[in-house]
Length: 144
Image (cartoon, rainbow, N blue to C red; front, side, top):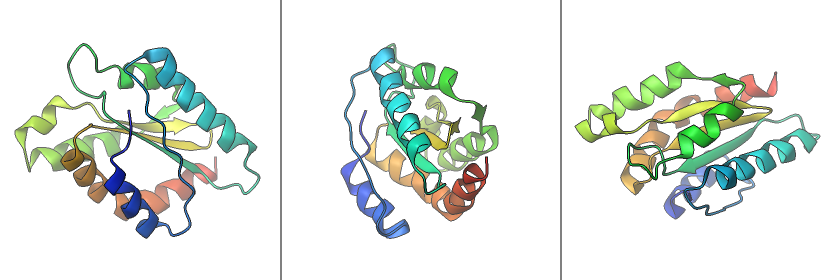
């Protein structure tokens, strides 16, 4: 899964100088878990004390190939159900198809993990919802 390229620019605008890594992964539970595990290990070795942000796009729907949520959820220490509910409820206001997505948000180590739908439009809409509170959420994760 890969975050839509246009959204990298928005992340840079939100937090200038942010360090970003891209990785495209097939719909495979072990590979998806490996990517998150590497991100969590990287965050643990970061001496700045800052929380890291892990965003995935795709694999959150209802098709048999959509395994991102099943891959990532067992690796989370906490799930942010309120954030997940907000994402779905706000996006359903724009399209009823949003209810077919299962976004996942939670904490793994010092990483805030956000699993978004795969469409460009859905990623943009979800980030619009997250951006106003993202800095505060990362501050909370940093304090863990």
